[in-house]
Image (cartoon, rainbow, N blue to C red; front, side, top):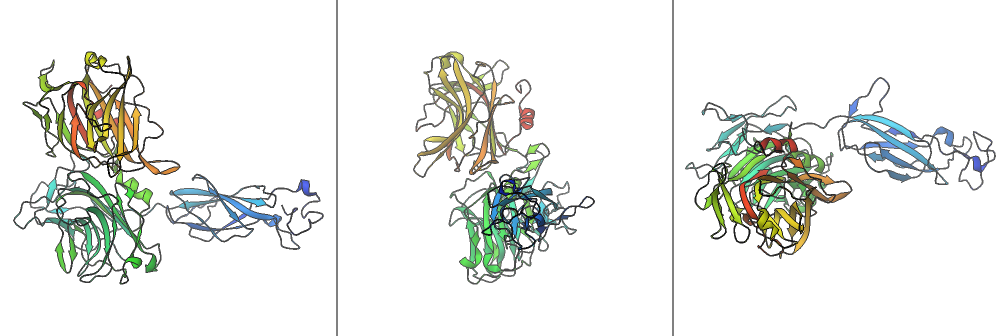
Length: 627
């Protein structure tokens, strides 16, 4: 460019041309120089560097033709910068600004595009800089507990990680055993720490030596199924001689999940802790926990932080260790990774009671997006799901419907009036509901509702009884109580005489029970299948985020049979909702009232931990009802 320099007087003629101001061309493609770690791809070579999330530093300069050869001045005043794989662009000021940090979110070839701007605010020809990002390093340790041996004398579970050449198998001790209550569901196994041995429940698993250098950045994660909240209980730890370099645990004092780091390997040392946002997490459910220790890739201990993640969501802000503990010094664990206990004041303690599955360790600080992805527990067919509650009326007798999931949940107890077990055409029992007083209830919850879950009910709606209901009536098939509301519910609403529709809803309340948020997804069409069995399924996928709205997370999906219904544009929650108390079928809490009875019958209610895919749902629905 150069023909419109901001030098007080426009040069005549413009360098490179004899044009006047009106003919002043826009800036040419600027020069882009990498200051590392990424190098520019050539026609014959494109070497991967760095990793997703690691910033590349780039310097921008005007095109040589846009610089006056006599004065060295340019009319370039800034640059517009974008990574073509990302949304949005940044604007930087100055002809030769400070190095710009471009942060690639993904691996593979990335293209940085830069345009120069002149004094008149015109953008010029873009320049491109292509570079390749290496995949992030994988886990250095991964214990899936899926390798339950046929020989009971074998007590070792394999480390299935593939990063590096050294593997760290873990040995089960103190009565620890493989359990079929596993996060990946049927056919999988978890680490069972509900021992009845005489050594007072001191079950755990441990590797022979350290798995990760706790002096550098690292991330740990696991699925935890907490049996009780009576005491401090540690899921994962890395001990030294006297204390632990980290603890991923439940804190009985604060009644919260926690991720902490000992300031020093010494007795009585200060533990700097990142606590969960919510108190009183539910027991008897699967919860994904992760802890990130971040050194910011330097040796300055004053910016080291710890942060806890629960079900893929960051809990508060990263906690600075030096600010919380003046004695803090980064130190390396010298003993094996402990699964189910920790070390303090030189002795092992705080044994975990419940189940642990999918324990993973990385020698890097995972980004929030990475942790969220890990919490999905992806498999080839989509996110893994585990059937954690299954109330099947078919074999039921008497006044209750037992849970047959294998998790031993309380039975659904039938109400004294309006509910009874009755044989259907095939001779199987169904829960008959009069739509006025009938329901069945059990103590809930069955899942951690801040994470992903799926709920499915097979129901028949009595057409005659439903026709008698007033306009606006809401009949709840199943729901989990939360104060005077339902934290989740499968609902049939009567909008007009011949217009009724299914919906899957979630509701959040404040500390005193007032509704703060309610979201739903409705069926595409009106209800038409009265008096016949129908599967109604709601899926809450906590790992989905809404583009442009970082506060909104999760997505609700409704299925009628195995047909997915359209998901509304605001299917997520901006606040967490966790039900407590009564889980019911045939009625539910709404607006402070329980008078939302459903007339008809219910065959079965199932709940899974995890967001079931459409293919997964098709396979679990029984023949004849999947369409």
